[in-house]
Image (tube, helix red, strand yellow):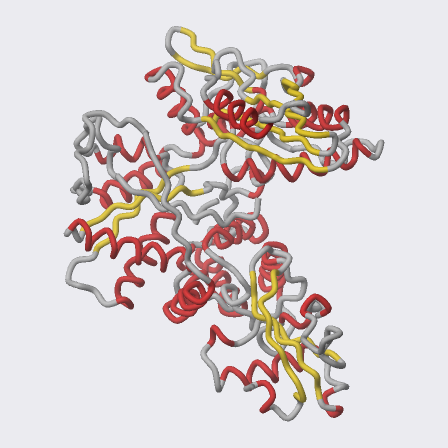
Length: 551
């Protein structure tokens, strides 16, 4: 209705549409008056955005404005949403488009375009209005380090989210300290014993403590419909195993000290075939296979730490069960695996060669780099932050219907809670108003609930972090994820605005010190230890929003 008040607009419709980056945005489709026909998309977008911005709250202003000759209709006269065209890149200009100027603005625009999936970025565009969030902000910071040699604090991006303002902040940083490059992750010799990463060291220790445990299995079930080229499927899996050394890693101990050995590239991924086509209880038998697979432990010293079952349900349907040990993979890695498996299978089924580019480094190279990089002054700085942030924390005590067992059992259940579209829109609106991401807003709400239930105003919430702050490791399969312990202060009955601000400050500070592994944080803080609860934190909020899982 507000669009149609503009002189250029005759008819309009606004829909939510998924962008190439995977996020949904409001898109306006407008039938324009003749006098607007000579205007380019960017100018029209700027004019209509300015018109709506003065009449509507920010969350109701569309991300793109697409001029069309007429609204497409179905045979019965209703709007045909499927016939609405995809927005052209210039339609995404959230302000009147002005090309980036100078090397820093140009580099920043290129980085935003790659991460946000929008090709044309103007110097007045707003990172978060274009779909940015804190995980993408970490990736922006990583790419800026390589492109212009600046270590950009996340708080700076949140404080200056408009491209021209952020570029000015970057130039100020460069003028004070000059370009600074992080040490490159280089390939290490395979003739020497390979070290474990900090995360792998943690899981190896837990595996020794609970021999035969299946708590750290990562299961995956894929239902494959249509004719399956069994040879191409096996070849694709074998190539994945050969491509990623993490998947071929085993963990051998000498005098109680573990090191990594890598199985040969031609080892092949073990697959067990099952044919259930003649079974009347095929689905029940499949479920039994899933349970049996989940109960089967891995041998970390022998490997491989990835295995599969291919279950034939009918001539045109298979189910593929893939299980990995967490010590060689994580949630982000699952996205990498599925993407590469799809690319490889399509190529091999068509008789083509491997289409994937060679990897410059492997996970063992990252593990060696991590231990060298996280040392000295850098280690002391991160350690001091966590010592100060978490000193004096207390255990969260929630009212429950039974006593906590003397030792954690990991028996669990799930309770689904659906946040509907209307509430999601309101949460996003609230986030934009207060300069927080949707994750930060939900975390603040979760903290408020926990505080009300427990009667405590000093809370620690665990958050899994992707921990992929370097561009070189984004395409690797491996165990990178870390846990951040976020301490939230709800003392003094803060208002919603004040609680959101506290949450934002805490989250950004934790992300800027996310390199220190959680188990080292525990050792530094030295909280009271007991077998009935996890040290430092007893609740978590896992926010899965990576394109390939974390903040």
